[in-house]
Image (cartoon, rainbow, N blue to C red):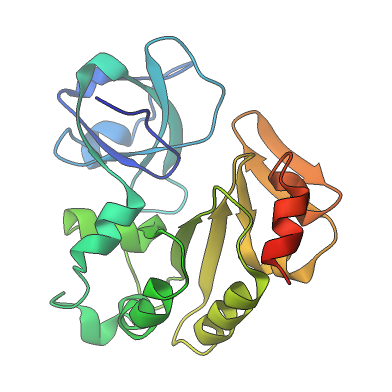
Length: 221
């Protein structure tokens, strides 16, 4: 592939043997996963020739952290590519799934937020595969690409819009350091950052953009 795989990307592998585990593969895996379904890139320290991935079964307890051979990767779909397809508009379960209705209602605000955005979690998986992974109680998980600190006023406006949607919306800001919850970033103070080497607690939100403090202060005025 021409670019590195990023957390939350969906990957298709050309054979089941491309998956490996640190110990043994879970018993449920052969019954519920096959190469026609994607795996999800997860955060973990890199290993030569391997990509850290997660595989999901139909139950919440059926989640497994595995590794995939980068040589047997045949397709990558990013969260922003899932969003660009706008598959929720004609989805057969739109009327029964609040998460898809939330996408429909939030689309204009997300387009206007000034950042590249994507769909992750169960909604992203169902839109990408057609597999019924969403329920009427599912949250909507979104990702915002933030190479620079975002304008605080825009994020506040977006958060206010998302708060009025028919389901809970969890937004993660993808910073150079790792993933930060939008809710925490707006609250200020200490923030938890999800990184490849594990969770990292920072004293202030701007620390997620090393060396960008001055630029961030200008954007947040």
